[in-house]
Amino acid sequence: MMKELTAVLGMAMVIASVAGAEEAKKPRRLLFVVETRGFHHDSTEAAIPVVMTLGRTSKLFTTTVTNDASIITGDLLRDYDAVMFYTTGELPMDPIQKNALMAFIKLGKGFIGIHSATDTFYKWAEYGDMLGGYFDGHPWSQEVTINVEDPYFPGMNRLGKSFVLKEEVYQYRNWSRDKVHVLLSMDVNSVDVSRGKRADKDYAMAWCKQWGKGRVLFNGLGHYPEAWNDPRFQKMILDGICWAMGDLPDRVPTEEPKQNK
Image (cartoon, rainbow, N blue to C red; front, side, top):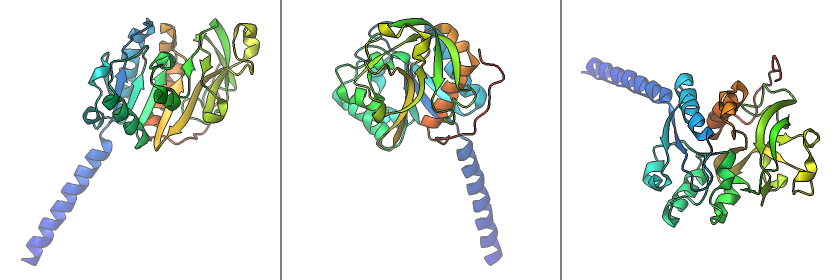
């Protein structure tokens, strides 16, 4: 009897071990919201397949894309590890749904805002506080030099000290450097800075922050469809999603780029 019990327990442990390994390999899930109630960016159509492909080829996450924010509920969010917004305007979410999204992040999940995510939910102040600021115009649409302020952050570690990219550069209101950790900023010497509004001439282009126990990342790049095919930007997106999901640390080793474009 004892031998049989030992064999049964041994088999149970093997099954549990296999089940645990399968669970560990289970990919994370990303909800990618692309609804626009304001200006619609043509690059949205470029962003969708890129994000889906990054998750699929890396085998790190699966992506669900929706252009209807009204589906967001507490029950739905239980199935996801992070939410990403490439959105504009006042999205169709009632107070209960908004509270569910905030609770999702504060309890330890991830939120990634892309480009015009700051041009979203102006009437919902908590959203702006969570994300770090609101869109306040785009004085520059041109090739700009972008300074890498934290080369150790995931996705920023192969960019060198700076790089050049054609971008529609946003400026922000209700934004302060002491409330976020800046990752990228515009080199003001690469533009006519007098066109901007900020007296401090501080134009961040990407940042991260904590919101409760959750991780929030904003990347202001991505206005032009071409950006989504740029390997540098794709690495920012992939690593940024993984960081927001808690799968990458705040600091990673740097790797000098083979060539700055």
